[in-house]
Image (cartoon, rainbow, N blue to C red; front, side, top):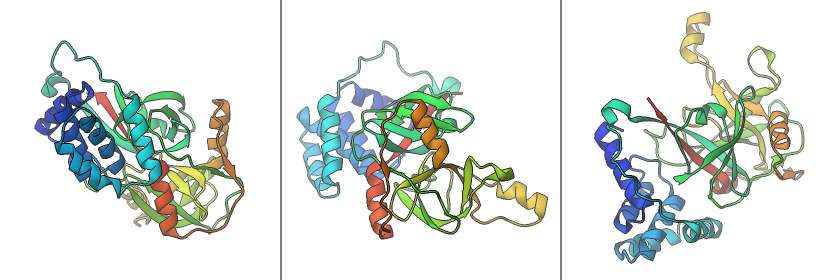
Length: 305
């Protein structure tokens, strides 16, 4: 995003949050098309709802077209968020000149672990001046810097994902859900692979290794088993360039996730009432992807330079 695009986005976003219907329709269109921001039909639907509620008739057609692309749960979550939404008070001065103090944007992935509670990596949200979850304002509730976990709160409705009860096994199938490379790719993606090792770098048993491809933007996303349950949290990938310099070989899909045990300890320490599932019936990958879209969210953070 160049400076002009960023400035336009900030001005339009501020107008939308203050209740300007045309700006709300414009922001909805950006999320619908995946322009500047990652494509997100549920967030687009939310902004179109606000615009139509303020009499902006141009948004009606967009709203009708999105009706058939969202699940019942996604529509209900967006409708609830729109009903509860309140415009923000306009600031007394215009945004700071981006050439001198423009916020730097970073992005990651998260997932809903309980109502309006989301998990992501601490490094995704560290030192945020502004934080959004699927485009809606969020805040950091708790962090564990050592485990690299963060608990977020945001008024984004939808289904919660259960944690896996059984211990993981080397060689079993895994899937990674998230929003990788948000400035290049568009929207939600799911990649698949296997659980390669029960420990991370240097034998770190608080992490495990997976072969499912991950990219920048996947950080904080769920690692799912064949039944669609969370078994870990994406945290990092092996630095291919550094490893190639050290070993003379380029590593392929060597990625790491925070273990389910570490995640449960973090949730227990913060009093989160999460679900645990014993069910282990394998699901088609297409079903896992469809379910994951309901609980996987895009996390964006703006930091002052």
